[in-house]
Length: 465
Ligand SMILES: *Cc1c(COP(=O)(O)O)cnc(C)c1O
Image (cartoon, rainbow, N blue to C red; front, side, top):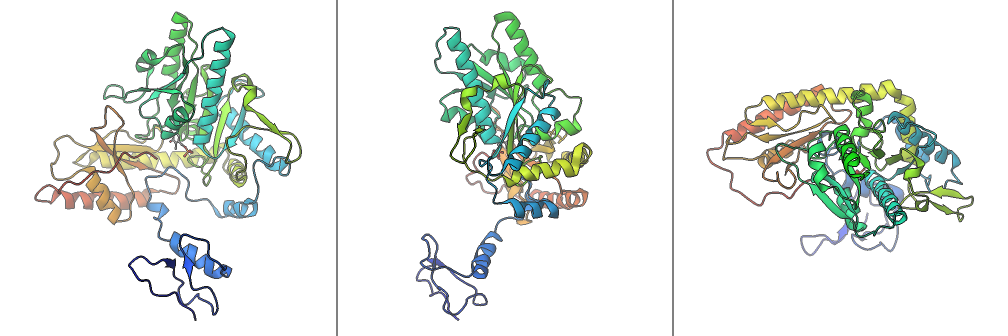
């Protein structure tokens, strides 16, 4: 048997192979940062990667992420069968391309596109890419209209809440668009009809309304924002479109908040994005973007390439990307149907509200949101409750029990308020919730028993996910 040489310092230079797996004559030196000269047999390579990945957290106890960590066995079988499909290769994989179209048409219908024949959409790697495409379409649309009217096309702006997800900061940064952040406040915890208007002018390409704010899980009042912009148009002639960032909520609201108009039922909403890999229930990475009407997607954003054979239109930032996730989305649409999605999302929402209620009843806490919008909620320490500990300490204590429940400050202007957030996903049921509540009780009791403040250290940076 061969074995790796003993390292000189503390940090081994290479990876070591468990002697049980090491085969005679196999490379003993496996460098960490350079390509090994020779290969390994599949079993040994598998064991090395498998063992390293095992040190990642336990997805079940990760209540920080929105992204799907479990799919059923048939989904995994389908995934394994279709991992080799390249979404861009629409000529080689016409069925996958057709299924992609079926999926976004299903979404257009679910989001009440007034004329489904005129709607247009695409899959993406996630909501971030979807946001880039939707943002670019608004920018082009604005520019074309301004040019046609003989106006200047100086630096445009995009209006949104200061609680936006980082993808919109990226969009504005990458395409040099002025980001107009409307601050949140105790009176206006999200963007609303009142706060949005002063930020809008003739260079505004659009307003972003968020269905499921990352920090708290609350829905922004899309209908109210649209109504305010309707009045603005009546007074000033400014016609400002709204894009809905429904990364989470666009897969929740159609099933559990059916009478809430947040989508294409509002004529001002021109496009919507959603993450297939969040409450769409598919493994990462999959996103969707749908425009209510083809006229909202400038034709010059669509490319036609012939070098894969055929002449298929493409609309995407990346070229090659996996097609399997799209098939998984379709699998779930068929497997769950409307009733299935409603059952799954309602169950998740009920668990979120149950947890929120019980956490809200614990002496130290005050709820910031209750899990009734997307199944995500946040809480804060009651003012003056204790000088001895903070939610960062509670987060640390819970980490010791395996739970990942981040604490972080609210966005600008409310940054003095630290909250802790739980994202409830499919598969997190009442019994796990009860274990969690017991663990929180226990950690709080430990912290409350301290006879002085925990010495302060640098507190963690802002958290967005
Ligand atoms: C998660 C999220 C995004 C980014 O989505 P990805 O699919 O991870 O790229 C954008 N906006 C909101 C509101 C989100 O919650």
